[in-house]
Image 1 (cartoon, protein in one colour):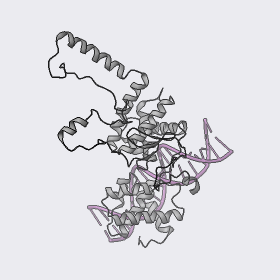
Image 2 (cartoon, chains in turn orange, yellow, red; image 1 turned 90 degrees about the vertical axis):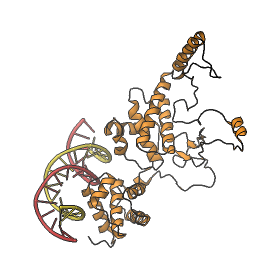
Image 3 (cartoon, chains in turn brown, blue, cyan; image 1 turned 30 degrees about the vertical axis):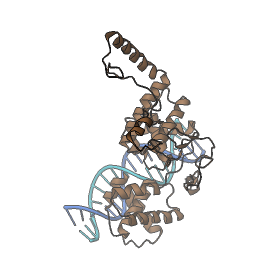
Image 4 (cartoon, chains in turn purple, orange, cyan; image 1 turned 120 degrees about the horizontal axis):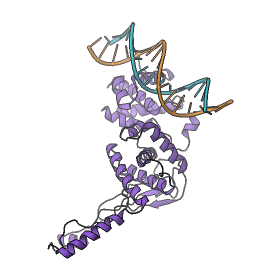
Amino acid sequence: MSENNRRKAQPDTTPSEDEPQTCPNCGSNHLIMTSSRELVCSNCGLVISDDVLDFGAEWREFSPEERDKRARAGPPSTLTMHDRGLSTTIDWRDVDARGHKLDAHRRAEMQRIRKWHNRSRVYQASERNLASAMSELDRLSGQLDLPQRVRQSAALLYRRALDKNLIRGRSIEAIVAACVYAACRFTSFPRTLADVGRYTRVGRKELGRSYRLIVRRLGLQMPITQPEDFVSRYTNALKLSQRTHARALDILMKARTKGITSGKDPTCIAAAAIYIASILEGERRTQREISEVAGVTEVTVRNRYKELVRAFDLGVEV
DNA sequence: AAGACGAAAGTGGTTGA
DNA sequence: TCAACAACTTTCGTCTT
């Protein structure tokens, strides 16, 4: 693959002063403000800005009485619950609002109401599907330690996949995992296919297939994963200094101008750059340590770093 | 003894006919 | 659909610190 090919469709990451009118990823102007006050592209699912995200109350109170007066029930609405967290639940305790026990007749009535309430809540097939998908999404993103913006983006992708009838005949788990992986790439939150695959029963192959499916059928324009995306994660895991981190980024930038980053696994390139940077900054890590956090083999780290050293004189005596 | 090195053979994904 | 191919992995013996 040529360097040019790999470079296309880069989102413009420089934040503009005002809210953008078009999606920086796909150029669509179908931007919607979600109920959790995130600006999201309804075409590709990119969460454009979530810095306004605030789950707290929108008022301030200055006395307990005022607090009581202003309080209202329920968590904020969110895309990651099948009903956006807006459903009402009926208490299981058979007491009235004042705490008095209900009589037998009322108890039986409440029982009936509860039953039908639950049945109606997750009634439609698509609702049931969404309910189970959102709990799976929650589990998976919890294990992957994903921030809220990635989860919301994944949830939106799943809703769109459901709308397009892509789930029927496929496993919910596979599509959820694919949406999570896609959301990671959209939001430049570096997780590899293997990372996501590790926490789901769906095989890597199936996951890749589902991912390609949603990209194609939802017409998503995926940004290319860059080695730089992984540097922070790896230097943190290796407890390397900020200087080494910056040095690694510098090496990657130079490598790009030489055109030796194309066609190679970005995690390998990142690992190699960090290896060199750690030596240059005097906090050397072994090839083994680095290959472990990057999830690649020592041999590949070795080969990549040899290439980098060969390509330009980095002052590393081998 | 640990870490680095490199050769050789095998694997899974992509590409182009 | 299939073969060719590049990238990557696994394994292992050797060299260096």
